[in-house]
Image (cartoon, rainbow, N blue to C red):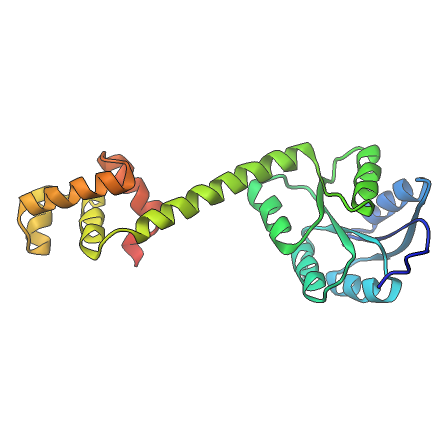
Length: 222
């Protein structure tokens, strides 16, 4: 538990590149009310220094050899540490940002951010807020929408009967109703009935859409 009466923002800088750490230290050391209490070059070293130095905020590189920034963040959360985590990354890809949030990060900025943005992010995290670089925030929205759509499709797939799944997979393989009937031992008319049921449940009828659904949900691999 941090001392509630201590003043200033205590920051630990973690990056496997010394020149990056030096740059971040220089920016934050020139910021009123901020103290860089230490540096770490690896994830494991970061965990030790969080325990020993009790910083308020860890500015943490996302991709490091050995223990990554995501693994450090997740470990801190499992340890119930109340340190705030600001991920520093070269990447604004949706999946990177989403993984950081899932791990328990409180903020995410890019390595090409302006010094004032780094200062603002540190202050916001210290005030109990979150901070995401605009590009990262946008990509997080993209990732969450994609995740929501994936969950929706999984829910639709779970509503299919075993026979509907068999018919759907055969449709995705490009087979006709007659060929599907012969493969499954049912009549072409019954195949058409199942295809009508698929259209209602999935909201799609074209072979291209049904094939995409099978591929995206990996139904043929079940």
